[in-house]
Amino acid sequence: MTTNEERAKRHKIAMQRKKKHIDNRISKAKKNKGLLVILTGNGKGKSSSAFGMLARSVGHGLRCGVVQFIKGSWECGEQILFSGHPRVDFYVMNTGFTWETQDREKDIIAAEKTWQKAEMLLKSADHNVVILDELTYMITYGYLDKNLILNCLKKRPKDQHVIVTGRNAAKELLDIADTISEVGNSKHAFDSGIKVQKGIDY
Ligand code: ATP
Ligand code: MG
Image 1 (spheres, rainbow, N blue to C red):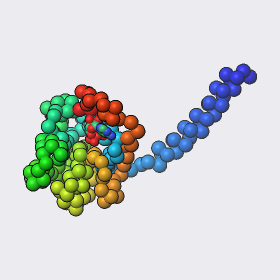
Image 2: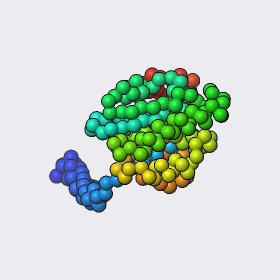
Image 3: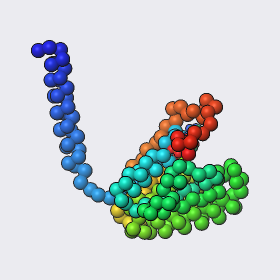
Image 4: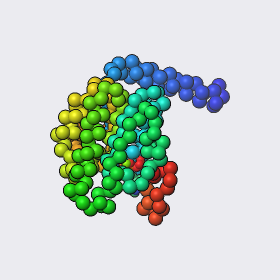
């Protein structure tokens, strides 16, 4: 047998073993459930991942809701694309970053007003997927009541998927999540003096 044939044979055996293992795991995953997905951490890729799932969901014809906390002082590509979409209800807090507004009282009023939209979506059995972008900061800054958020998430329709993004997600939020991805910051162009790039950063 040539080296190539030996290699092909070894590969086939390894792949057969792998397939058996994967098929076994797939056969054990039988449940269906609305997921709470949390995308947190200091690296880039949290919101863009959430909007990737929105694209998938919309592609499948699902009804979706998006609430963007904090963001809004500039228009992101995802907002331009999805806000006019017939299957997406898109709400933006529109205050900009807290270090821009520098006004706690005003931020709290805006956060509470924006949360009402989130609460409405979390009660709607018609919405299959809800994105709460940058929600974690509303808890960290104490703009919104953590228990109110937790209760609304727990009481939402059983098959509704919710995706929460933002750094420093509260422990209680992580505790009730089904999937958590901690996006790490290995390198970011901004640290090399490169400005935000259209399509990549916003
Ligand atoms: P994205 O929207 O690109 O997925 P994100 O949601 O993970 O980013 P945010 O903290 O919401 O990150 O910040 C949004 C903006 O800040 C984006 O323009 C992103 O490129 C930038 N950013 C994210 N992480 C870092 C970082 N570690 N250093 C500098 N800029 C960052
Ligand atoms: Mg983000």
